Every structure is written in C-alpha cells, then in structure tokens.
Amino acid sequence: MAKEITAYCVKCRKIVVMQNPKKVTLKNGRLAYKGTCPYCGTTVYRFIGRKKE
Image (cartoon, rainbow, N blue to C red; front, side, top):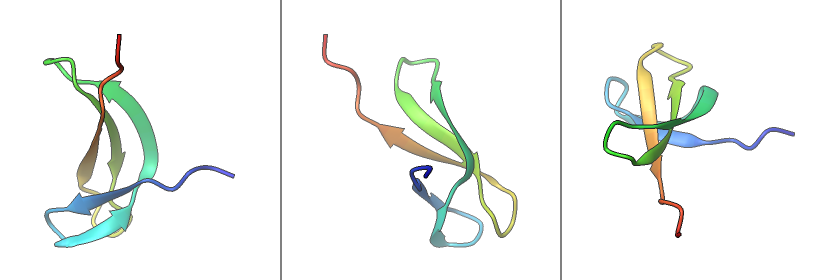
C-alpha cells in the first residue's frame, strides 16, 4: 500500500492527496515531494526535512 502524501493546491485552495509523488532535491539542497493535483492537474510540492549528517 502506497503512502498517501498530501499537499496544498494553490489553484484549488485546498489540501489534496498527490498523484504520482516523487522525491526530488531542489537546487538549494532541500528535499521535497513533487506530484500533481488530482482535480486540476497543477504541480504541487510538499517540503520534507533535511537528512542529518
């Protein structure tokens, strides 16, 4: 069972469950999940904590 990841969709103005979430690293080194809104198709992000080294 896949873990459901939620994110805020700016276009729909509500919290939605991401479709096709992928873990990505942004240019500044932050980790985030990137996916799409199931209602409007907009790209949504959910930032996650950094790894402690």
